[in-house]
Every structure is written in C-alpha cells, then in structure tokens.
Image (cartoon, rainbow, N blue to C red; front, side, top):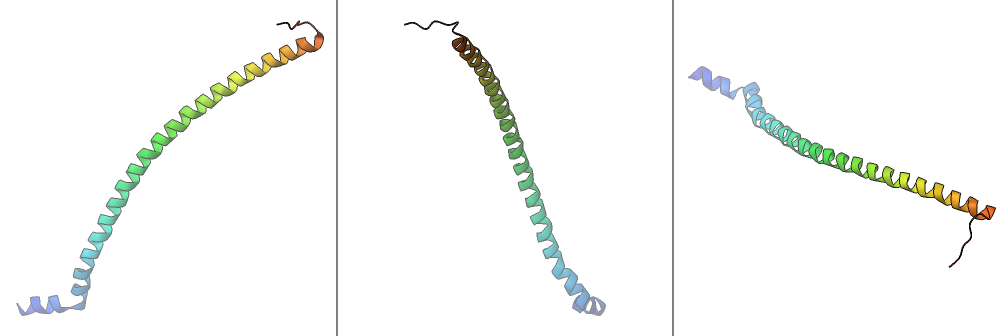
Length: 88
C-alpha cells in the first residue's frame, strides 16, 4: 500500500494522469474534424458535379452561338453581294 501511495505521488504519474484527458480531448477533436472534412468533401463533390453540368451547358450555348455567327456571316456576304432582295 505504501508503494502505491509513493507511486501515485510521483511527478511522472501525475503528468501521465493529467495528460490522458488532454490526449482524449485531442483525439476527440481530430475525429470531429475528420467528420467535418468528410461532410465538406461530399459537398464539394456535389459542387464539382454541378460545375461540370454548367460547363456542358456553356459549351452547348457556345456551339449554338458559333452556328448563328456562321449563318450571320453568310447572310452578310449575300447582302453585300446583292443576292438577297429584302421586301416587306
């Protein structure tokens, strides 16, 4: 019993017993951060998917604008050549 009392009163044991709750708190905080990071990662995946769909829409609109631009150039060329008669 005397040996146990001497052991529990030693500074090394006190430091160890004081560090256990601190280590537990650090581990708990790391686990919480990991969960938050996983949730954030899922949200970022959703954002990436939406951005991909938006890029596809922008590419589609860009292609349509290129077609319209080509048609306008053809009409302009015909107007300059006098091939088209405009009437109402």
